[in-house]
Length: 366
Image (tube, rainbow, N blue to C red; front, top):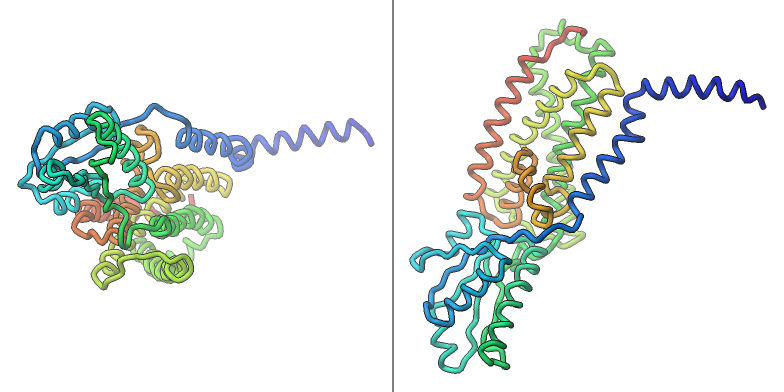
């Protein structure tokens, strides 16, 4: 064994390694990105107060004491709404995560020796609902002790996470559907430079097909495959894990619109990313730089409510966040009106990306 041969090849291998962008990315940059993402998401942070809507339908000294105690705790940003507001409609139209209702008979029940029941409502995920319930219940327990009610006359009842939204699997199904759309973008990032390298685009240019037609044909193919994949996902969620999803004809139609607009958008993004990739190594780097941050910061695998506030703000700039939120609203909460603005955003974004991709895309070899 000659050290000279080993050292000579080591030098050659090191030079080749340094020229390989994908090798450097996956061995050095990629682990760094993952630890930064997971560290930022799960690292201990200072508590950020969550929003809590309160409707006091039984104004009295004790009910306002409850409101003041919740506000003074620093655990919530309290927003008190008028008695004239329909709370259920307010929650639905504003996608309120948690709202506390003080019923009209609360004070009379309490003063007549019965329990005063506070009702927690909203559209929070089961995990968030449980966390909010525990925080509010702790405050109510302190009030019970302060006013000398050892029998706990103040009681908190939760109506969140009932019916079709009480299982965690319900939230994973829309998230995984979002992931399947994201993989379509990833495939296009590879397809464009590969077709260019193999001169397939040059051959297509002689067939008479336009750039827009080629992009649209890819969207249609991906949409059909996406429907098949998502039907299987939904079936597994329902029949294997007992998911309860809103699948009425109108819900399925709206879900299809969300899927199509999201697919057009991410297909266009994939094409644009592929256009700036000059080789397979660059493709891998660009594809993963787009895929993984968006996948982890858009609520694909876990609710964003548990992420630090600054990551939640970042997620608002990611199109996949609106896509997944729309699916959750339609499939889990059966709340179609609340997704109107998000669908408009997806439609406008999809049109812009499609037009830009069609304009910049070229059959010619670079």
